[in-house]
Image (tube, rainbow, N blue to C red; front, side, top):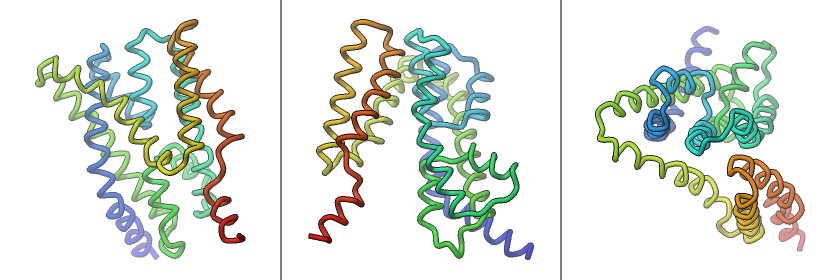
Length: 238
């Protein structure tokens, strides 16, 4: 029994190796941005240790650079991370976990990449130890990358470190483009949200404009964006 648990754990770690190399450069970029915005090395590493949310951490650092307050940063990251509630629910429906501590650990450690690995794995190979193997690799790669970025910030010229701020925009473009390709309604929702944010920035702080435009855009999207599966079913029925 113990050997099966260990085998499943190691299998989860092996499946996460590509994610490891994907997380490292993003974590390094986050650390360079954070240090560039005035955060100390300890604060930067602790943020990755306790938050462990790539897109949210980069957005929080970007908002910090614009002078946003703590409340607006917390609300913005909360809205951005709402998808994790759904992802955690899907994972726990596939992997039956009775231990409350393991549920908390799994819920806190869910990432987009980890979610993809778990939900696409065969049910026979997907158990709590497989999940823990994925969590181990993804978490350590993010923290390790942050440490490397903090060290690199003391070596790289300031102009090079500051240029990594473009990663914030690149990251969100990378998240959006795969979904909007071939889906005009989703593309339209993104454009409408961007326009709302641009207009709101004229009348209020950009940090609050991001929060409001995100919520309004999401609300609009629920009415105009169709589920891909629904479309497929309609085509088959026709």
